[in-house]
Image (cartoon, rainbow, N blue to C red; front, side, top):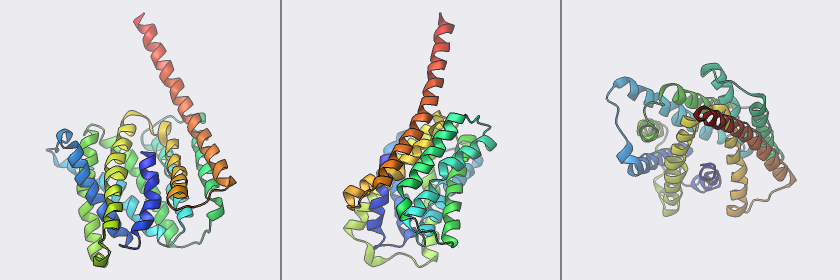
Length: 289
């Protein structure tokens, strides 16, 4: 999942000359809806009650439309470095929300691990930072908050629906909303429909959205928010690696120091989770004796 999302960052730069940001988002969601249903159609069940459909629509708005829409709009006025840092405050915000709305117990080790991961990410981009107060910053913050709210909403209201169904239907509900926004703000660039553009958005819609979001839902349906949130810092870190090979961008000592902090943060979080799993396993063994 992290690799699929990370390679999306350098690839999306190839799409910007062809279409406006929200038009790119439309094709990302459109192809995600097609690929998700094509891959999982045998396991997708359409709910029969209106309440579940409304919940799925709300999740699609929070997790896709508002999150990605605010992110794309915000990044159009801010640097990619500051955009990545603000968007990936998501793990920190989601952990705080999980304590408030899901009553998850936060351990010191996991909290420290998450904070180390965040500081490691900041260190990776430190030489590229150029903070200019403006509306873009507020859009980016709103995007991170919306993404975190979407995660909490899924765990609170949609776990019973099934990951295959949630994954496919969120795209189906979100895509028309983005389409209406694009048509109301200038439409598509007809001259930008090239093979290169469709190659990029096909990848974005298939692996980096349809498949990656299923993995994202699967993880959150099995584990607590605090136990896996630090892993999301691997996305901007891996994007630096892919940018090095794809865009030939150079890395610095800050990059490698940031990788070290992120790795330490992930290790601390996973170590805490592994301890708990070993404890549960031992308890089960003792019970069966």
